[in-house]
Image 1 (cartoon, helix red, strand yellow):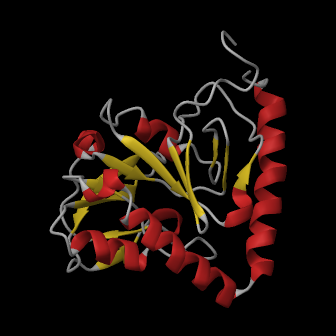
Image 2 (image 1 turned 90 degrees about the horizontal axis):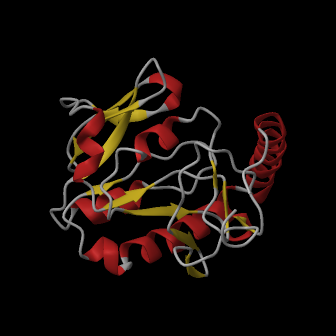
Length: 207
């Protein structure tokens, strides 16, 4: 069931603060170990191994590091799309092939310095790896609150698989959801992968 906007927004804000605090308290060494495990699991996903184009992102702060993930995908000669945050908080995209210089853009988003390809470029990707603070077992994702990825994912190819790498305790039973939220298909944790595509709605069919 989709929560009322006011209720969902407040619940998301509270959960967001709690997750960010937990990430900070985990410590850099613990986060680095988890990031290495996450990188290996994402690279080993059959959908990633078979992909002709992958959309991903450059991590920052306490997020699971994507540095080795980007290097690993690029080493397979697979095009990697990285987001370019626009002033309206929507996402453009640019190619990263392991050699492009990354520049600091809006909202701490680092992007390739090459040509922006347009909002619809995401439709080229077979797999979309999305930054996530938490994911629940029904595919609801908690982001940073700007709505950028929910707008962008509306333009993804119909068969694209959306992948969320999260730390071990960030796969939850319940993440507040709003009508505009876009689902995650695979939650990748250091300990394994959860396929969320066949999960029923939170309150059962028809809700």
